[in-house]
Image (cartoon, rainbow, N blue to C red; front, side, top):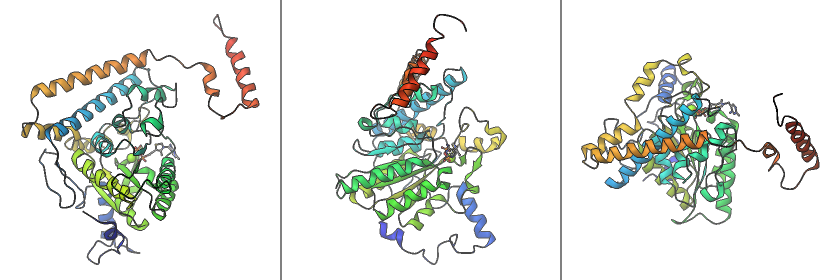
Length: 398
Ligand SMILES: Cc1ncc(C[n+]2csc(CCOP(=O)(O)OP(=O)(O)O)c2C)c(N)n1
Ligand SMILES: [Mg+2]
């Protein structure tokens, strides 16, 4: 296993000099390529063809039952994602943020967490929510505009979705520092925090501040960057000269790039990182190298800024297909198993649809609730005026 020390040592002479003060043109080009292609340091345990491969530092013992469970997670959450996307198209949701293609990154990371660990998501983390025991129907209100998220963040140890890019990194850093101050770090029973953000978020100041604070306080924090290659229409290579995981070195903590379409590798690397954090060796950056297979949101049209052959290429690296192929090859699952998961996913989609269509509108006074811990006369006056205005529409067409 890697030790934090090896990551804080200066770059060995033989390593690529992409961090040198003035890189050559070839180095810049190599660096740019490495931002948008997997490089030699990519940790992979299951190839796109469904072959198990070994890695010297990260390996995993997985039973047939566990792998079937990971497959089930990914199929169900993809079905939820596709259904929610369709519900937006039917006018039942105002917007939806697809996770298509990122199922392995999220299920692998989410399943590595323990119940006492805390997670801070951005807005695409439906797969992480699933692993924290949040029912997918609880995600819909945010995207219909009826609530801000209906789960209890303390009960599920899953913070509300954050739309402000990178902001949750500060929240997570503070939380993880708190775990450290509370003495919850230092042995195998320790707690850790995971923070999820995108490649684009790494250009935000909040993320860098979080890196600095987490590093100097040895916070038990796993920074989990899903590099899905795009920040809306901005490709990763326009945001960084070097692969994102290599940035960690500048802050003095380990950075690792994992195949984010490989659920086994993501699980293994995240387990390791969480374990390091529990023991007091945090923070750690994981760059999960993946691809956003759908639009940024339902308001976006990616055909305006990227070529469809890129998507075709990534379809061959589908995170679910490779697990299915492996399960079949190993004879760890038969057609009855795949059929039962299919049926379960259809039933979940029906549940989601019925819940969404029948979701009540919140009462108009709701928007004024939970603003102040105690009452506020100005807000209350505004509320009363608004309710009187709404009341004026009662009982007829206006
Ligand atoms: C502070 C801030 N600036 C800009 C935006 C608008 N915005 C929404 S999503 C997004 C791109 C984020 O890309 P990335 O971090 O790669 O995450 P992804 O959407 O790919 O998951 C931007 C710029 C925002 N929400 N917050
Ligand atoms: Mg992105």
